[in-house]
Length: 215
Image 1 (cartoon, rainbow, N blue to C red):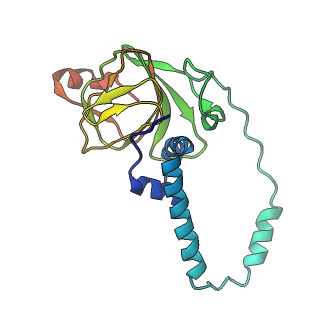
Image 2 (cartoon, rainbow, N blue to C red):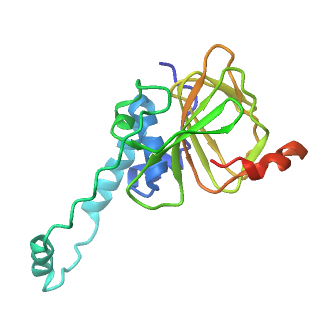
């Protein structure tokens, strides 16, 4: 697999430091699992952080710190959370191992030739994660974002003003990016997406249908 598009370095640094929402962390983590270059960068950041901790001055612990920890350990376990049903991932059972451990909601059609399936994450955050399936040759409407959009290609391909994106490639969008993705004609495109905020459609047609497109 040849990967030509990677997450911004500040996003990788936030991943290494544990500062990302669960949805964003999932997308960056799946990309890094396939990308030796990004794994090396993340490992370097983790080593720098470890060295900084070793050089940091010790902090005096509270007198009751040990008792507090032991009390927390001795607390009764919370009631188990009922298991969620696990719908089949969107038209595909050949997903990266990390995603096979995820729970999925029901898929739904969001536009002609486009379906999405939410990924159920345990924690609350600003971003949401989902699989996005697009038919061959699908032309998305030109749009920007009120938040951020992290997209990882799992299968197929798409292209826009920023280049061609194929399996393993990572695409980052925010309010400063206007793009119009076009899916390759040879096969459907399946992407893993983390999104905060909403799409901002461009043009009269985009503004007309914008209330009906929800990702």
